[in-house]
Length: 343
Image (cartoon, rainbow, N blue to C red; front, side):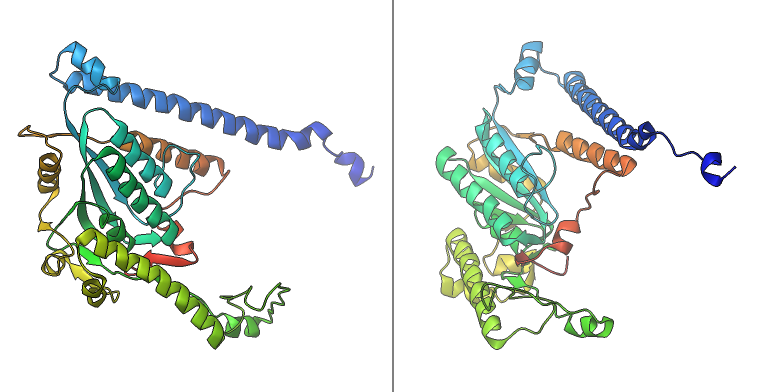
């Protein structure tokens, strides 16, 4: 008896079983994710009901986004500011943060918004997306914005803060880093050692500008420097507009160096030294809220964090996609960056 007869080939159905099994596991995980999200939402509602001393009617109005009292909206911007998957209502990225800002501005009773920033900056486009969204909301809704700096609010983190009406920083906050960086690697020597060579076919002599396979030419360096200078000018102008300074006053401060919160105050880059309570009270004052203890509305942050965590865990268990980490986007990003590299 030959080996084939002893070990017959598996039927065709066996080959299809693998993909079907993975598909079933994925569907099961997604259903579990949905169920967990519903349970979490229910838990948040029950917690709000159990902790709130208000009357039943007021509770119902609050849960239906019809709050009868004035509040301060609160958006936490954490980590590198990068482009994001706009199809997801959860997650952390320029689109999600911009959406939360607009949602809070549309919420009845929100009279001011605090941007709680702890970020080294990020990609130019993502930073400018949030910056322009803040300016639009301020113009359309007449809502004041307060920036609160945490450990770090540097480069792009400072850029978006410059759109705010006031900036509050801790004395030891790291801020500043006003500038642009475009990192280009030269792997030519390493490629030569391993016998690897790229032979691009291109439509123009500058089409592969920034290629790691060769040294940059003088002409290419000038092209990229002009690009950087243009983005730098946009940054400086944004700071000048937001801080009510001239471009000539900003430029000596904008050589890429970082400042402590105390140094930033001395250089007019922030308005006051304080903490989250100070930022809240300042926002309430500018928003015309008279309550001695202003209420805060954090729109969807805890719930979206939970959804992101559940999705990440599901992907990790199933092995069906990448698991996101806070710095992964910044470390792998290419192009122009409003980013402090010391994060």
